[in-house]
Length: 130
Image (cartoon, rainbow, N blue to C red; front, side, top):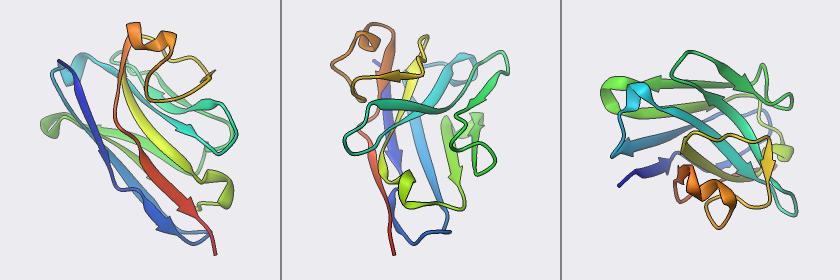
């Protein structure tokens, strides 16, 4: 069974930084495609960043240049370094592993067609406000 656990969320002022972590078990981390989604209040769940085992990396336009996705294979952990945060980045952030990474879905974290192909973490809240 695949298990994903996020950590690192919290509250920060605009312009600040946070680093999210996603520790995985039950998968061969080196061979897995993984990514981060977020669900902002009143909006669809959107793909923020992802990487494939083949080396392809994706960033949404809204975060490119501010967020960096990375992984530590020895720790089975994926990271999302988020810099220059704005209130628009306030959301629940979810990590996912699997084979499907659509640009957006109705809701993150389960109860969608993605569940057939991906596993989800429980989500971590990021709040950016002054």
